[in-house]
Amino acid sequence: MLELLCPLCQTPLTTLSPTWHCQRGHTFDVAREGYVNLLPVQHRRSLHPGDDDAALQARRRFLDGGHYEPLRLALQDMVASCQGANWLDVGCGEGYYTATLHAEGRQIYGIDIAKTAVRMAAKRHPNIHWLVASAARLPCAAQTLDAVCSLFAPIAQAELCRVLKSGAYLIHATPAEQHLQQLRAALFAEVHPHQPQRHLQALQKDFHLEHTLCVEAELDLHADALADLITMTPYAWAASAERRAELLARARLRTQMQVQLSLLRRLETDATPRSN
Ligand SMILES: C[S@@+](CC[C@H](N)C(=O)[O-])C[C@H]1O[C@@H](n2cnc3c(N)ncnc32)[C@H](O)[C@@H]1O
Ligand SMILES: [Zn+2]
Figure (cartoon, protein in one colour):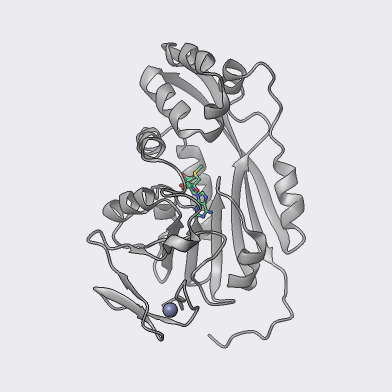
């Protein structure tokens, strides 16, 4: 099992149901759905951090509709070649891609700062460990993870470096230049291409880039799927109410998914390697 730490005092957590506890007596209940909330109120910047319920429900419907299936398949191919037992999906959302990581001999953890996301994920995928926690303070001991996925989620690079073993994998997905170009053109007067290379440049300070590819698919969206895409896409909220309403009134939109999917490996660290 992965060594988890108490978010309040960083001593090891004993993970026995129905209540986890640390050496100093802090306790965390296992929810009915099987997840554990390790995000103390003092570590939250708002009452309900992360994606809201409407965005999460919309993303679940959209992903269940198979629109991003080519990305799920590309991820599946990528992770098939990776070794190691302890895997973490940070900013896992409602767990669509996390479930793809599952394989014999792997312990998979999904972490999201939004409690509703983790609850939805736990209900659907009981064979995965689900935690409410922040990417900025992962409840994991140093150098214990063999692989981390960060898919369209905020990255706290120093924290990732702390928890990953030397040589461990980082799987990263971010919008490529023309991702949802037509959707963005309908929402904004001026559209700038995404800059996926910027993420890779920053990551290459601590990671070796093994492989990167651009996963593309044409999307032909009818009204319901279009409404869900608008609701689940964070930047769509930056558009004017008028433009959003115009787009929502459309019966159909053709656009393109274009995602940069990368496999990186943690460079050797100076810290003493752990024996496990
Ligand atoms: C765009 S969604 C991507 C979800 C999922 N990875 C996917 O691709 O379907 C970003 C996710 O990151 C979560 N998130 C935002 N800030 C976070 C943080 N500081 N720590 C952990 N998760 C965070 C949000 O709640 C949301 O579920
Ligand atoms: Zn504690």
